[in-house]
Every structure is written in structure tokens, then in C-alpha cells.
Length: 101
Image (tube, rainbow, N blue to C red; front, top):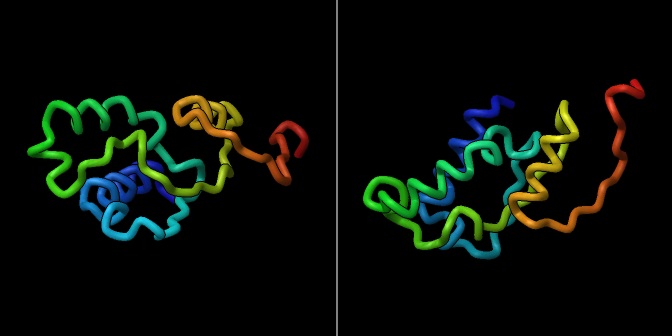
């Protein structure tokens, strides 16, 4: 996938109210959610200061949405950042370091 497009898709689902309208919906974004973890601060800032532009159909903060991700990533630090930003308790399965390949 393309990291920017993945981040945009997450924002569209959040700010479009999809995740609020369908609270039981399970959505999984590939590759550690692309660029989303790296731009979360900016996305959250836009949500807080310009809700007229960002959150016209959503009342949930970007940090409070629930979705799943496949943590396949080139850099282990990418997954670590995601865990730190969201205070997650994740279980690693079949983790292979690129240096082992």
C-alpha cells in the first residue's frame, strides 16, 4: 500500500463518521497504518482547532478511534511508535527482523 493513501483513508473513515455510525465495524489497515501514526499530532490538531474543516461528521478524537492494523513494516520502530502513540498492548506473532532475512 501507499502510506499517504492509507492515512487519508483512515481520516476519511474517522471524519466522515463511518466509525461512529457503525461502532461494531472491524476495519484493518495494512502496514502499520501507513503514514497515519507519523501525522497523528497534526491530524489531531486539525480536529481540535478546525472542526469545521476536519470533523464535520465526527465527534470522536482521532486518538480514540478503534481499528486494527497489520504491523508489517520495514522498520520495527514504526510499530513501536504506533504502540507508544496509542498506548497499546499488542501481541507479536511471527515477527521476523529484516536483518535475519
